Image (cartoon, rainbow, N blue to C red; front, top):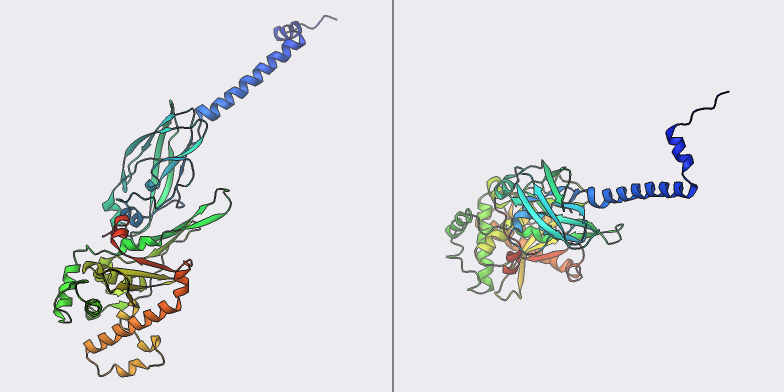
Length: 409
């Protein structure tokens, strides 16, 4: 029987000694491992678009902090380069020491195209890079309903150009105030709540052009002759605040309990607030709207207001002296057409209102609104002193204004 003819490959393998064969296999495996490592560190950095707010963009927070140097939104991970206030970042792996990265963000209706360049100092490290976002502030201010937007980012890490990445964000309504967000601890498992309720100050708008008209109407009531801020005594300060209260009642403001945001997320907490323009146009206020509206008018006449936040409620206070040592408080929900017996059931106040003039009824509700708010302050005083979560005193001072600007509309 004829011998089976051996193929050239079999002849080569037979001619190679065993140790040489093992060396050859080892070199092949080493090459495959090196190629995989190269792809991991140099050819593929697995770029990912990330943010700290669960894919949400809050125009009110951007507008309020546009001129501030503070990072109200902390970076979603460390280490990072750039400014976390840009909100939108990309997660990449550095290749070598001082790796250069170029990030290009495509244009959307809410921001222009931008190109940013950074240096990643440490080698073989995962970074979050925050490129410059050139916001369209007019579009942000005009956004009154949650709107999806596709964010497209292209990055070049070293000499390697990453594949284009796309992620859809939700641009929230200008009326949604960011209360805070959850951020993981360093162990990545537990979460802590980052409180940002100071952003309520953004809805206090003492620069609104409609304020002049409201102040003229208040002067026409003859309750005061002029607004002097703290140039008079504490009684003069209270009288000026009453003049503002009176004119809102004359405008027929009504209490509206609509305050909850339609927004729901396990990452962020938000609250719906009417802007100054919205409140004047609708003549409707809830506890939040009424508080920021009154605070706007107080700031306009150089009286320092205080936003008092309780769980599920807010009212306003004001300092009665320039040194800010003494304060009165005001339950703003009582500015509307309310049943006073709901607030003071033991006094049966509604039965005494029938024969009062409008000014007499207005002064009575103002005094009772101060009494009711003062009682609440005494009731919850220990919670404010202990910095209990959900209990916040936010004076709208010049220092606060340097950090948080009015958003306007």
